[in-house]
Length: 173
Length: 173
DNA sequence: CGATATTTGGTATGGTCCATAACAATTATC
DNA sequence: GATAATTGTTATGGACCATACCAAATATCG
Image (cartoon, rainbow over all chains, first blue to last red):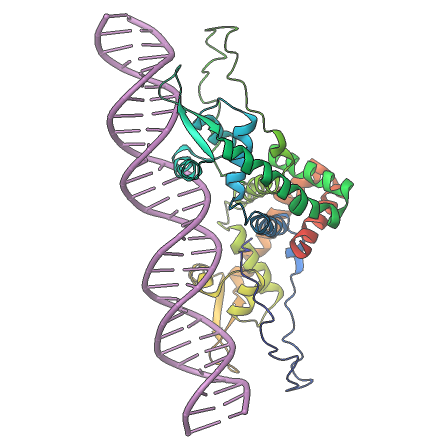
């Protein structure tokens, strides 16, 4: 379904509307017809997902947390004492790709790898104090600036219904 | 929110269930708690989107069409006589990235670039006969094998409500 | 016990998608 | 007619995803 994060630089300069040239012949380049595309589940899903991620990044700009990083911090906080493989796999991240991600979080002192005493192969993941503090602030930002927007847009009931349907798709489709 | 297309190779071998070792001590490694993650809009949106795309690709395996390619064919069919820039931008594709995509579709004889006589810079996009035929078959596959699954899962009314809400997010978020 | 298989974290690597800069040809602007 | 803007294109780099492979540690089982 395509749909990239194009910066939406439309309407930069008054190309036609302001300059009354060729008045009636070419109004404003006639927008294309989306047609059946606007009914395609995948298309609208992807577009919505991009917008949501975009907004998420803006809300978290002060904390410099991506959606993926936020989800890792959330999961580590909720499941202390787990190792990299467990955290990564439940998030759908492949272990090799999880390494650089953790390197990043660890270098920023948000979480730490601790060699397990039971199984000296595995690294137990823990949030640092700074990590906990940052996550707490992140949660507030997400709740007030991000998720709150859904309520404004859809209303509480619809918001919950939407999340529920998406979860159902994610699990049973 | 992470969430990749991991091949879900779970339950490959009967690691624990079959071999009755350490019976009650370690049941089955206790699944992690998702916690607030399952309420995060971005997380559930991304997971759903991946599942939908995955299913889309399976349904279209016989035609070898990706979601992006399908959307291009749909849009070209609905808007004949448009050039690359117009088609690409309405789909959120940057012009440079659209070139290789069109090269692919054109090499498969699904669509064609035609030099415009009005503006000899631009390429008018058209579906070939084969392209029209493939698109027609693609539409049927999507309708019967892909979109129909949503009705089975959510019901007609919920399906429409979902699409509507996603469209609203895509446009107004 | 000891040989073999499995698991864990990690590296290397390639693919795909997305984004920016730059360019030639053509057209628009003034 | 000189300058600016547009179109398709190439080149290129980044982010993300996926696979193969490796060493260390552990599990398995003869």
